[in-house]
Image (cartoon, rainbow, N blue to C red; front, side, top):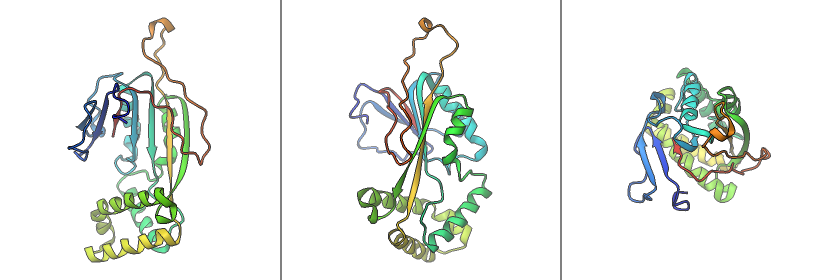
Length: 244
């Protein structure tokens, strides 16, 4: 995106330095930031703020704080977008079903909200964001789902690798047992045609109570809500935005 929109400045944040170091456009910068400690940006800094895939990063009690921070750093009239995938996938085989049950219980014990993906629209409305829209798309996992499914399969390979320590702790497995289980799960992805639902919600930060001529920040219109199976994204204003 930063190479396509060269007049736009992009800021990406993450809790660890996992971004590319060799290929970095001049209009793109990254910072190590823990959003739970607040965002290190001034009020009304960005025209567009996007956050994704942090359902296992925030305890349930901290979601309101994080959303307020996203609102704070967005300019009045700017767009805020949240995207999440639930922890539990769909059309699972017996091995994956068993693992999902263990993982979900482990997450709940740690104070995580495993259903936060389905609550994005409501949380944004409660935080005062206006013109909130939402949609979700079903994404296949595995070669049975063509190129998209293969890409999601690769994503899950990385996810299971990153969760190895947690799952071993929850199940008592050793490395050999864990790797054997993951191999069986990847077979199930194809046999049972597993898929995940990706949820997205977006809306506009309201302007303060000023007369129209006193407001200098741009406003962006929100399109009608796509159908539940649509993968259409909201209109991204071509301005700076943080990603976490």
